[in-house]
Image 1 (cartoon, one colour):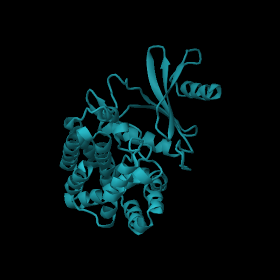
Image 2 (cartoon, rainbow, N blue to C red):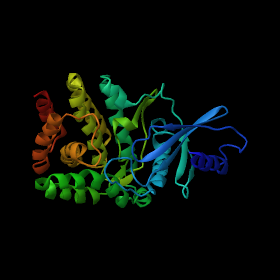
Image 3 (cartoon, helix red, strand yellow):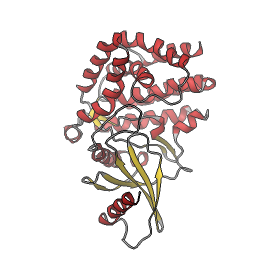
Image 4 (tube, rainbow, N blue to C red):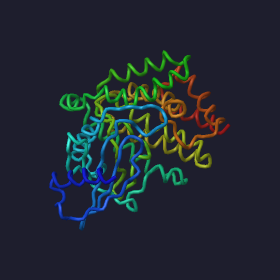
Length: 334
């Protein structure tokens, strides 16, 4: 750790964020599986420093390019212009070291949405706000060729999302292989808006001015339906962990989706919703049998319930999200 501290300290000094004489106190933060994150406390101020990892912290062998750190930095700059209340503020970046600094958001004022949901605190108002912010960010980026060029990161997105989720799941389910690989290529071939890539409740803070999105290292100019389906998937799967809140979770699902579509002015709703509804069951299955399974579905009977529900929808996709949610509500109740 001493070598790491020296490197991080050199970053602060080189970026003019601290002097060499100032005491710096470093605190590792929970950063998911793909990055190291620290809070650094300096006299009178704190900030976060983030570094991408080449090998992700999962049991499966999952390699990913560290260049994603630069694209997350670029996404933060985009969000700072279009939704400054809904993302950390970017402070400084060193592309060679693969490090950037951003504002520190105190957890007592910015609880993690996932922690609230898992505690049974299910607020449809929060879900609605998440859908609105996500839709606003997609709308601000849709149809902008300069962003498409700046976030030409399909290779990253394949390594971080399409392969560990869909390709890995196809290997576990050969009968679904053709459908899942078709979904991979269809998704990879769309370049419509700036995708965050990891809109999960664990990456959404419930701030005093609304939701704050963090951890955008999968940023890609691609299919916005992926972000929508990725987030909605978590609300469905949490019905297994919090069966007592299933009705509220399904109501939140509906509120998030409707708030999102109210902002989605770049294409007809039917086309966008069809893609999200096709992605959703594949993502449900991927979080059971892909390289990054959710940690709160551990009972094999529950895993089998997800498989039994999702597999037919992968082969014969629904066109409406409400259909998926309604059918899942009935399956989860059983």
